[in-house]
Length: 453
Ligand code: PFF
Image 1 (cartoon, helix red, strand yellow):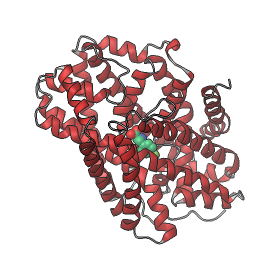
Image 2 (tube, protein in one colour):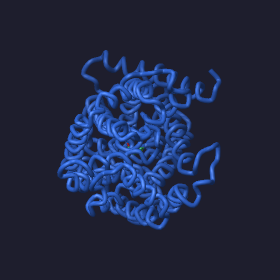
Image 3 (cartoon, helix red, strand yellow):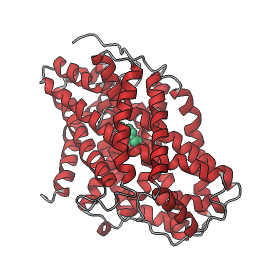
């Protein structure tokens, strides 16, 4: 077995730095924007339960596998897969997994950046007092006005992409650790404040019942696939983002503990967001299935009505933009790391090039909210199709292949050595999960969604 490798892109300064960076990647629009709106669209409690099961049964074991492969390979996901396939005597075609991840990352970042642009736009709206009073109609019209204006959407999308390119071009470990350490707890505190507001809305129990009382007649086969896809999306799995961060993880750090910490923090943030939003939805007679605009049509009502709402509202959208930023960075890093390793490009050139392509692709999503909103395929807009393809098909498929490679093809001595679990039983449990439960679970959901079972 070759010696453990070193990364040419640097290393996190400690286990904590990795936890913070990976939490920064995991916690983002997925938790605060996407989780509530897809929960609303898919009927609530049953969807949440399936999503939680997917996190525990599929997400955590695959996250451990991804971090483990990344740290063993110490390169971009494409080269890590190539090196580990070689080390395990397997086909070099396994590097295609890395390529699929780069493609998924480009697609996700293209629409992610447009939505992050909404959050940036709302920083100014909040600060200018546009939410004051918080009447549901006016808040709805404000959001409609934003969506209807392609120039504004594209401008904010451009700003978000420029911010992301700026950090990745400098190298991800600089500054990320310090920023996440302060801003994540602040976001968490503001979510608690919003939950506190929701508790006093008079509809808190309705919100909780919607979130936590499962009614399985309300969830479809496609809903189950969306819950699975979201488990991947929210934990940044299946496309190499966590793998590339794992590549910069110090050798001593325990992978199991770090993974569970990250998954727990991520899930908590999503549930808090749900607990803040649904009581406001019901209190104001809004529609839980309102779609991607849900948080932008609900939270401003709360900020508009609460004391100090101007400050808290502004701060909230600043922190949401920040959370999106630390996720966007991790979507771009795998491709950039590969270009630096293989093409000898400077980080700056590689990042600007990738950022440009993603920006261009993002225009399609931005326009699908206004002038191209009638252009649909399979009954979905361009944005919906890109999200569905990347989140619900490419990420679970990538995760399935990662699990199969880590569990069946990589020599056990390597996974055992990297995971270095204190208890033999924990390693055996992980191996059992990634060998059988995870692949069977993901396959069943796919087969179910296409109507074969
Ligand atoms: N996990 C991020 C979120 O929940 O907002 C989004 C994301 C980041 C997805 C990185 C995939 C990824 F590789």
